[in-house]
Image (cartoon, rainbow, N blue to C red):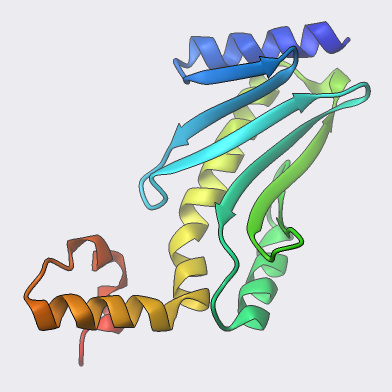
Length: 162
């Protein structure tokens, strides 16, 4: 079963032209391109009973921790295959486990799509909730120096004076 699941994952990554590494048999790492979060690195690890799916989303929030964690927990109620989690440092990840017998090309594609969708669509909300002060400081600093604020366009609604 272990070799079969690894073969399926390898096949899906290859067919979808997703660059990946396989650091040891059944241990995959791939970069999924996004729009808000430019890249999400996902790892898929084939174990004896299941495949573990893991992806880093954002570092430990600077502020407003309770609101960030509450938002993630509420979001978890609507998610497929993976859920938000925090590690011992407070960094935010997506994590899940899927039984080996569920690993088909369709399921691997669905899992990769879920990781990309949840990481990408949640990124700006996590930044707004957990890093607002830092984003505001960066914006004000760029304005004061006459520098571009283009990479902060996603936050214009609450950054610019009304």
